[in-house]
Image (cartoon, rainbow, N blue to C red; front, top):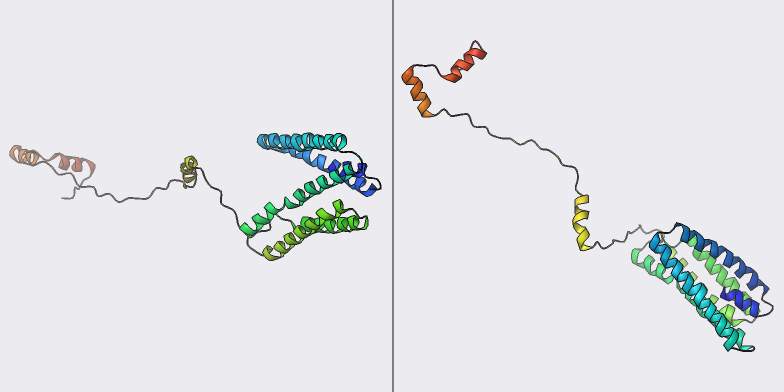
Length: 229
């Protein structure tokens, strides 16, 4: 949006108008899809960021350059504002670069994206150089350097094994995590020694005195014709 506004303010920048008009349409579709499918917290954060940057900040820049800056200086001021925003855009992938170095994995840094960003930076640098427009050429020098850094890291870590970053577990969740790793219960046989019933001495004495047969002997005789002694 800023580059489109810059191209409209500066005469003879038809290519900047076409490419940034197309970019506004595509990026609007991206943002709309993200808001449609993101979680509630992510959706709220995206909407707040969109309102703050694309509405509030953009409106402030238009008011500042249109009413407070006059004449030919307006285009220069707006151009340097675009340079600052473009540098921040090119510096945004540094977070991914740091993650690649930390994890030694290029999973989150596709080579095709880095390659075409570098190629785009080279082409726009050449365009700004031929048009003698420093505001277009300067940020693309930084884009070229960062693009080459990304491709260099891809060449270094492309054959490295994927490393998964460990996430810190809150203290109150550790018990739940440990329980979730437990397997199903298993039953193991346990040998138990069963001691034979010992008849009280009084019962034996009483049987001997009365001459009555022992109860266990009677039961054995009832169950079988023979009872082992």
